[in-house]
Image (cartoon, rainbow, N blue to C red):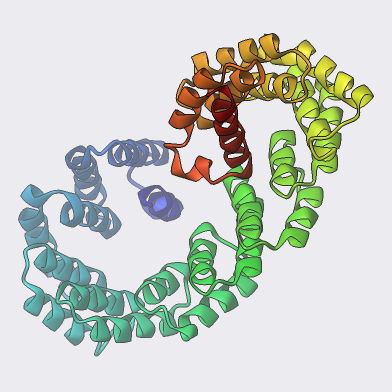
Length: 408
């Protein structure tokens, strides 16, 4: 903030001050700027003070006054005394004097100064300060009136945000939309619009705002939010449209297709990714989605192809999801119980509390007729209330119980 203001008046000072070398002034201002940016406000104030003494240019005194009022209690009274005669009727000085009184808690005097100033100076800053004072006093109605007046005088983004933060009515909603239409999508304005769309459950418009925020900021999280809100609101057609046109990464695309049970599409993306990268992670993904797209009932030839892809990838990756998937497939399709159990046990070494992996293990022991052991494991699985409601868990539990009754 200070950098912009300093650079703005730099050329003015260099032009009008003839008794100092312009380069020296430039260097001193840059030094003050560096001190300010690093939080060394007293040092910055000292530099501006030296420049004021040498040049007698009031702009330097104003800069040190602004810093003192904001950051240096020790220097405020001294500098305000120095500036009193020079700036007594200057609106800038009156606002600084009001700010000083606000910092000291003298809100009544600050309001009096600002209201008096408004008789001759219609600067929106006066209304903003009065609005802030009203907020300190928990008088939102008066604050809103002043923020509205400030915005009427200067329709800047900062003034709009002040107004719409306090007033979240449909009027503010329209003001934000109108501002965006005229000036484009800034992070602050569009973030506020996004919150309003979310509260109103206008999910397609919310997704559009997130897309605009991505275009403005380049931040990938907004792209993901745009897609995520469509998925959350079950606008699947819009989500697919965005997915196809939005240049999303392979993993996001695969996850979205899988969440919609579009396994053929998920398989195609995984295959293309594997062909491009030769990353065996995608080979395991191909195996998963090839299995799912046949509704877990592939014929022998297809099953062998799925097993081949798992064999080339799952064990090497040591990923518990793929190990369990491969192991369960070997068990459930009566391919190789021993190997299936071994694969599931490897998954459980990585994630020993997974109900899904324990269910696979119980099913493996059931398949080799060790029903008592299967029952012990299944009892642990059924402690997970959510997992125990799944069709597969219910079926496995019933079959294991039947096995125990037969053995008795």
